[in-house]
Amino acid sequence: MARKNGVNRGIVEKPVGSGKWWVRICAGGRERWVRCDSKSQAKAVYGRLKAEAREGRLFEKAQALPFRQLAQAYEETVDANRRGRAGDDRARIQRWVDAFGDQDAKAITPAQVQGVINSMVKEKYAPAQVQNATNVTAKEKRYAPATIHRHLVVLKAILGSAEGLESLLINIRKKVRRPPYNNELLRQLDHGQESALLEKLTARFHPIVLTALNTGLRQGELLGLIWSDVNWSNGMLYIRKTKSGVPRRIPMNSTVQRVLTELQASTNPPAEDHIFPHDARYLRRAFDKAIKAANLNPFRFHDLRHAFASRLATQGANDRTIMELGGWSSPRMLKRYVTLAPAHLWQAVEGLTRNETGSKTGSEEKIETEV
Image 1 (cartoon, rainbow, N blue to C red):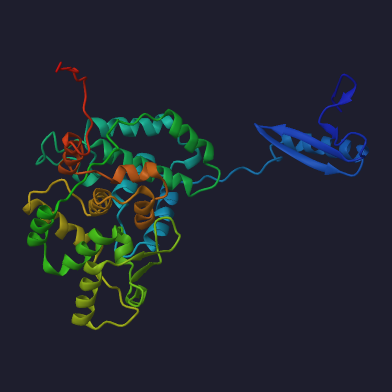
Image 2: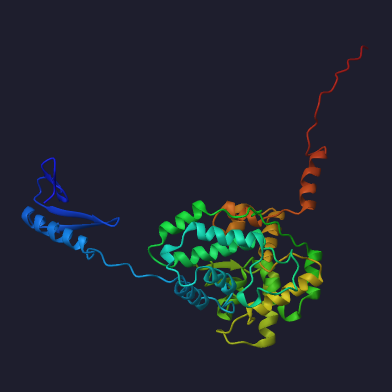
């Protein structure tokens, strides 16, 4: 039994004087504690564990976790909860599978991740089957910074779906450098642009776009709505599946009530049918096509949510009201969505020039007249 300063190493009485003995042993950077009934038993257990440590039998060898297997399991789990959006992250997931393959996920290093990011900054990634394509320009081969960030988000989600990779995720956050980009999204859609968009958009998608503009619901929330979620008596929509996982209710204004009334009258659907039975990819393709035709690039479907928040702010709604209606959890997140139109800002400062609302600046010279 190894001793140091007259004390048996690896054998501890905790608390002192309690008669409760523990064996502590370390091997290969891992630690193990064993409770014993007496000091003599602790000595015997310590000797046995030391022998197991020398023979490499103290700890079970950790099983390898192939990254490819982890990524496939993650994609299946995510797609199972996406209606009409299965495969949204497939290309991003494949990018990381191509990079790491069957490598043990626990052996991935931040340097490897940084190498992938650096290659994406320099040249647009293409799957192996189209890497030799020559019909794209050098500019088209470049990844946008926001796209690179999205790839990294997907990687973190894959690694976060497994246990024991917490330290790797922390190191990636600390050590991997990403290209900077402006995260303050500025998205506006005035009523003239709205009319131009609807004119170019296929009529069957008008109801979902108008509902998005007047409720601020996300695309997934809209596609998840069924007719039983509509409460005509109190004018509320029940959102069962939200991004936060917490169901919420939002009011329907007259525009939404008119749109849904006309839609229900034209189809006479059962209560369990989806209000908007669209395929997510086809919806976005049609929407993007209309955006280009209306010369509104780079407006996206999700930016209808920005327009909703900005219009509420322009009308004077306070932050608390907008956060409640849109389901935003913090003023910081809300700030990314609210953009005041230049005309509204001009009207605000122009009001300072009016005599009844403004204040005079400078000093006036007092003139006294003798009579």
